[in-house]
Length: 291
Image 1 (cartoon, helix red, strand yellow):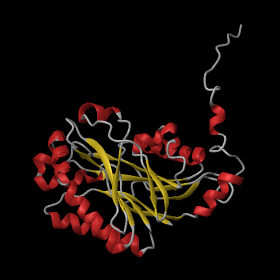
Image 2 (cartoon, rainbow, N blue to C red; image 1 turned 90 degrees about the vertical axis):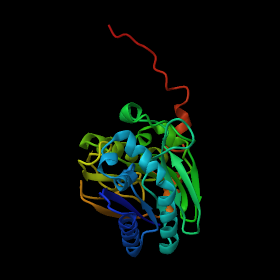
Image 3 (tube, helix red, strand yellow; image 1 turned 120 degrees about the vertical axis):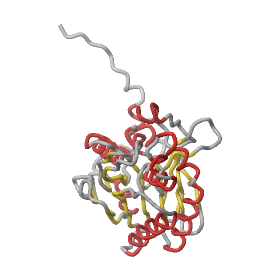
Image 4 (cartoon, one colour; image 1 turned 180 degrees about the horizontal axis):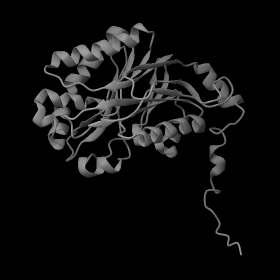
C-alpha cells in the first residue's frame, strides 16, 4: 500500500461548502498521487466550529459541542470521498458526544466499499482531562481491511507500549496527533517509532500545523507527517520511511510492503515482537544497596 499522512492546516470557514471543497481537494490530491490509505490528524475537525461563528469557535466548551453536532455530516462526506477516490481514510478526530455526560475523542475510519467504523482515544492528556473534560472511549480495535490489518493509537495513546501490544497483529498503526510544542511532536514521534520497533510494524504520524487565534482549543500547533518502520532487515536503518518538513502543510507519502513486515517478524536481526513475553517475571526490579 501507499500511505499518505497529513501535516494539516486549519481553516476558518464561512460555509459548509468551503469545508467540503477543502476535504475533497486533500483527498483527491493524495489519491492522484497513488495513495491507498490517507490519515488526517487528531482534532483536525475542530475547524468545523468556525461554521458557528467566531464566538463559538473561540469558546472551548462551545466549540466542542459545535463540532460534535457536525460529525455525522462530516462522516457522510468522508464516506463519499473514500468511495469516489477508491481510498481508505482515517478522518480527523473530533470530540463526540455519545450519550455519555462528556465527549470522547473519536477518529472515524472509512473504506472505499462503504465500510465505516471508529477508534476512540484510550488515555487522556492533562489538557484533555482539564479543562477539556474529554473522557476515554470504547476499546481498541484492529481493522481487517483489503490493505492489511490496521490499528489506530490517537496521539498520547502511541506513547504506551501495552496499547500497541494489543494491536500486535497490525501491519500498520496510525497515530494521528495534535501537539502544541516541538517537545509534544517529538514525544508522539518517538512513541510511534518505538512502537514500530517493538511490534515490528509500520507506524505513521499526522499533525495539525499552524497558529489559529480564533480557537481556544487548537490555537498553537507544531508537527509534521511521518511514516516509520523497524530499523531492521528490508527497511531503512534509521527507522524512517518518510518524513515531512516541520510545520510544512501537505501530504507525506511512503510505499509499504506487507511482505517485508512479515519477513522481518520472522527473520529480522532482532525479534522484539516474538520475544515480548520473555519480559514477564523480569519486569520487577530487586532492590540492591551498593555500599
